[in-house]
Length: 212
Image 1: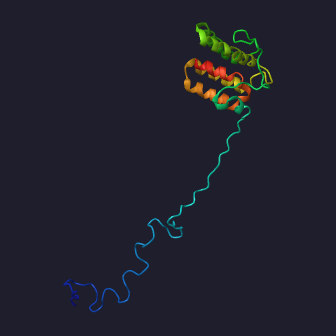
Image 2: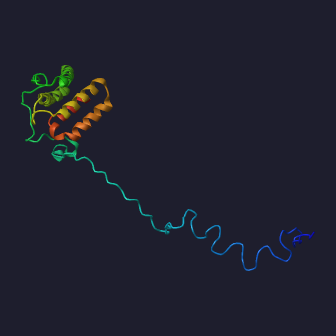
């Protein structure tokens, strides 16, 4: 039995007598291979570029979405400063004697008749109770709303409403009748944004009617 060599501190060393646990000239950690890399951020991975102080990393390429083109014909002329100025001469206008009560709607498709009924019912009720300035305001709306009902008659050309506009008006009237203000605003925005050329003459009057 060979007793283990005593360490200088009085402990028992596990190595061979006279042989140190580390070889001279070979440190336990090699210079440049430390467990923590000095001068490099901890999140820097080998092969990845390091951020240079004072520089901004490049942004990823941005994707540009192309919106559906919207007609702007007449917008600067009729909505300048948010005020309604008037229709373009080339846009169709109803006869001067076209009113909500008197206009011929015999050519309106059955599915769009609720539009006629709603406009006439609401306009007649408001006019019966209006006096003074309110009555004069309704009288100025009469021809424009009557023109809308006239253009609602089924047919082709600028003097007839297209099917998408007529369908949107049907949904709008249903929303007004049910008190659904969110959908009222949504359909008004939809019609004015996408079909402005077609609705420019009577749209302000219809929008005003929905607010009364």
